[in-house]
Each structure stands twice: as structure tokens, then as C-alpha cells.
Image (cartoon, one colour):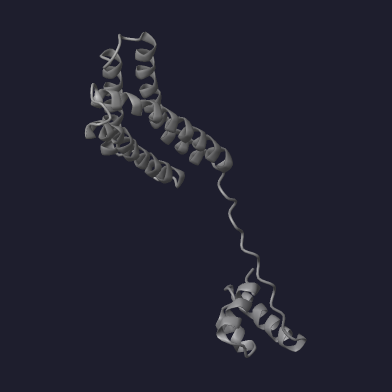
Length: 201
């Protein structure tokens, strides 16, 4: 599932980058208008859409990382910022195609400058959903069962003394305690606790 999530995410990033590359031309045409390359604003206009796209990509990367770790990324300011960035791209692209600096209106360009920003917007909305669904579908690791400790063994004469003590304690209707073990055999506290637990199984 993780490899599938990475593959889908990379494909979406690729097509998102293609879409933003196309919308950059529309934003430039909207801002530069009749300017020629000798004007500084003509060059500066090329930086606007990459700057907005950089903020958008940073937000998407943050959302993807949070959701991949199973954390909530549903924050209202993030949604509003994404919509503002993508809305600005949509408006400038459509405006530039409806009022071109040179020539008449081309219906095909109007269509592309309307549809491609919408596709970019939807990709940006779909990516967190895909991350969340993949994180939800990821199988949970099987719980690790601790290996049972090996049974403690004593020499025969000590084992006999311990068995006699255990039988006496059980006849009293109570479980064997570490103190009972140490009354029968001389062993350290931790060893006595393990022997008592073993006798009470």
C-alpha cells in the first residue's frame, strides 16, 4: 500500500507541476499585458505564479506528511489559503484569455485557461484525500507477543524442598509468594519472584 501511495502521489505532483507551468503563462499575460521585454515588469511578471505555486506546494507537502502519519490536517486557514492562491490563478488566466493583449479571443485558449486552473485546484483538493485514504487502508502491524520465559530449574533436592513448601501453601488455600519460596530455598528476591510465579501458573 505504501508503494502504491507513493506512486500515485508522484503522478499527481507531476501533473500538478504541468498545470502550474501552463497557468504561469496566463498570469504573465495578465500582468505584463502590452509591456515588452525591455520593461522590468515584463520579467517580474514571470515570478508571480511560481511564487504562488511555491506556497501552494509547501501547503500540499505539509498536508501530505501529516496525513501520511495519520494526523489531522483539516485546518480552515490552510483551506482558505489554498482557495485564495488557486482562485487568483483562475481569475488571472481567464481574464487574460478573454482580453488578450494581441489578437482576438480564441475560444480554445479561453477553455484551456478555464479548465486547467480548475484541474490544478481539484488536484490540490484530491491529494490530501488520497493521502488520508491510503493511511487509513494501511494494514496495522501484528501485535508482538513476548516470548515466554524459560522455566526455572533447580537441583533435585532443592526442587523437592520447594515442592513440599508449595503443597503446604496450597493446602492453606493461598498462592505461593516469593517469601514462601525463600523459606524453602535460599535464592535472590528476583529469582524467588519468578519461581513463585512459575508455581502459581
